[in-house]
Length: 169
Ligand code: GDP
Ligand code: MG
Image 1: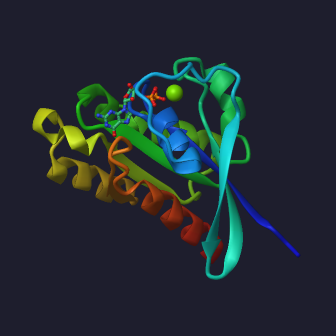
Image 2: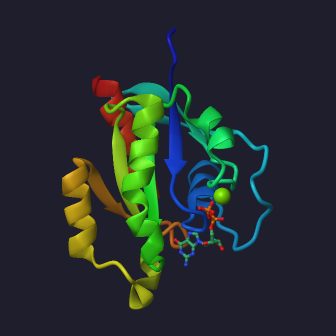
């Protein structure tokens, strides 16, 4: 029997919650402090998509977002992409276009991609409002998900959507 496996990359500035999101999705846990993900490649979770098992292999960018040479390895062969920013970090929002370009350079323009506005449990300290996030998503031609990895809001939906999009191709 054929097994479907999807390599998913989660990109965005340091501190937006990428490693936390992978831990949450694949292990069901949230911790404020765990060791930096240097050298770690991926965690996985098997989900059901249209009655088929799909292995979601979630690759972390090793906490060295600024070093192109290292992170390039992580992009190779990616089939789906999460562009993540934190709602409490304006710079992380403004960096999204650059992250998208980087992914396009490595993976081509067509892999299923979503924009994620994380840390919505901290909306009282938000520096990015809903409308501008939605506008960016529209301009990039991707869907916006608002998540809280901490409160486990909408995290599974992000990966389910990507798996479904990959499955359609
Ligand atoms: P990365 O650098 O993008 O991998 O970010 P991390 O996963 O290391 O997370 C950076 C910090 O943000 C950590 O202290 C996390 O516990 C925290 N964090 C991640 N997601 C959330 C969230 O949804 N809400 C809140 N309040 N904190 C979060
Ligand atoms: Mg990290």
